[in-house]
Length: 191
Image 1 (tube, rainbow, N blue to C red):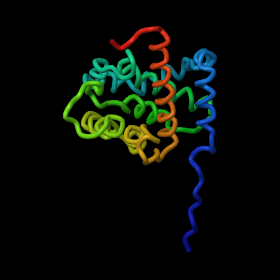
Image 2 (spheres, rainbow, N blue to C red; image 1 turned 90 degrees about the vertical axis):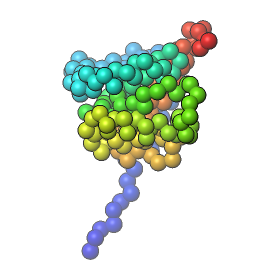
Image 3 (cartoon, helix red, strand yellow; image 1 turned 45 degrees about the vertical axis):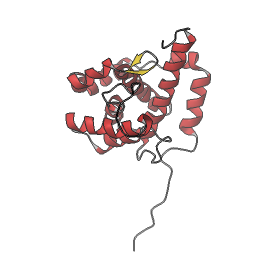
């Protein structure tokens, strides 16, 4: 007789969300504490070295993501923040997959601010485009694919399947807000 599988939440209720909003409220304090350890910096570099050697990944530097931040810089920030957040919250994760998935989560390779004949709204469609581009360039595991495809949750209806995906999704929102606020707080405009 098969045992019924328990539906346990991947993360404790409110664990990430509560800390995420605290980070937004205390961003200056958080900024001081968001440093990676020297070992984490070395590990991070080892995880992304082959990705950063790719001309296609470096192309992400040509496209603006939020305010004046390039898509590549945004993805690096999300990957670093994800690594830091998993340590802060003491969540056991596949760090390598999380870092690599985060670095490729916005690998869509076009300027989403310009009008085009692409079907659908960018917020809903770019995860699939990013995944297709990433699969053309690299061999991805299931966690990396899930991170890329589901990082826009809850805007897109299907939540991430793995802890790493939730962390990247929250880190993406956190970095996006900070990048945008930093730009407008400086008094600059997009004109």
